[in-house]
Image: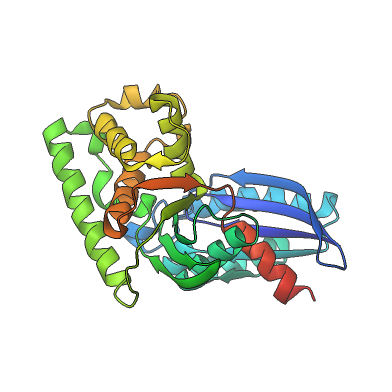
Length: 308
């Protein structure tokens, strides 16, 4: 049976196609990512703008063609932080249903964190027995603590790279270095407060290492590899050095940076600030990275709970 899974995030839409067999074995047929930036206006206006909605519908026009041409039998669609926040999410869901005859399921922040952990645990041997999983998205950051290959706790912090950018960094490169440093200090203070509030029901435990997933952390890893010649595990010191270096750069210099995707130029400094705050809070000093993330957990959920 051929299925598709849509992971509709704040920054990107991921579209995966699998052939699934009777014994729950599967093979990946097609994988594609579209940077539709669904959350571009959501965190300041509470609405998915008409412009963003039109941009997203163009992507769903293409997905409609894929579904037909690839003979996909069933499509499962999930959405995260931007859709959790948008007051007009129901309107968006209705437009998508009309376009491809698929309902989007908006998962909670806790569900998202658990599914990310599930996707990683189901595909990768962890580098330590006591591991903190961190996934920085556009609208939220999902954090879970894994002990002896079991999820001890998981939660979602309602701050991601795009949301933080909209709150603090919109005119960042128009400021002088001293003012930029003040903006970063204010952003760090905000993240620390939100993190403290989000984590209040969970015990901070001694971690052996941090495992980072998804685009923001992979972008940080790529930049550190290019500019400091360090392979994972990444050191806290080099993550801090990268933020310090980029704080003093012009936007033209950022554009020329090797290893930085054009569509992440405005998100990398908010992402660095966020990641350093999480590492500070939990005492993380080294970071491994993984290619597995939410979409892998969504596949596990579909195989175990939706198809059979």
